Image 1 (cartoon, rainbow, N blue to C red):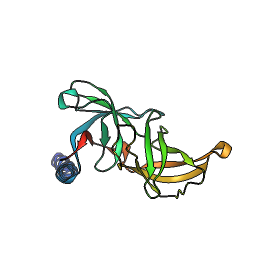
Image 2 (image 1 turned 90 degrees about the horizontal axis):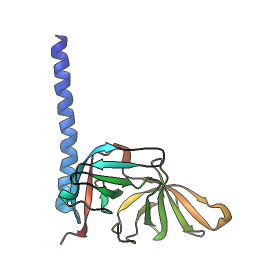
Image 3 (image 1 turned 30 degrees about the vertical axis):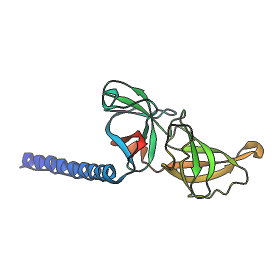
Image 4 (image 1 turned 135 degrees about the vertical axis):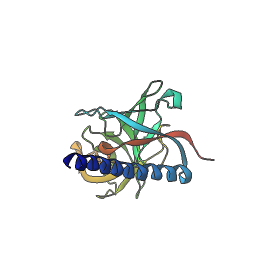
Amino acid sequence: MKKEIDELKFKLNLVKEAVHENARLSKILELKEKGPYDFVVAQIIAKEPTNWLNSLIINKGQNQGIVINQPVMSFSNLVGKIIEVGAGTAKVMLISDANSRVVSLIQRTRTEGMLEGMGNGLCRLKYLPINADVKLGDEVVSAGVGGVYPKGLIIGNIESIRIERGGIYKSGIVKPTALLSGLEEVLCLKSNLKQ
């Protein structure tokens, strides 16, 4: 009897996992049909989080058209960019990585700053003018400057604001909208908008 119960629990768990996967894949299919970008869907096969470095390994690479500096998203939020490419795998540097830099905008006011990863799942938006209109909860998006990230990709929200030493500029802590630690699939954006 116990063996039968264990088998039923195992089968029920498989069904639950299939339901979750189906929901994620349906969302991707809808985005592929209605979204503005072409993309390659990739599964995460490894994670390399350390105190300061945050990266993922995906199951797509050069053979599937993946290239260095290709932007990577979750369903609607910026996750990072490709930094290494092999034949069938690639490495993604997350926006929270201490080496990550993204020119970004506060969406409400169009104030521009430099988003830097902090290595702890958060980012810092630096070099905001001292008189910048910045509020808690403001949404931060990519500015489309620098040739890597398209303009307007959602990054996250301002969690705290401070005036930096010397009073020259403000900075804000940004919590990424994408749950970086819970990703299972990512979307590797192709370089152009759909026609």
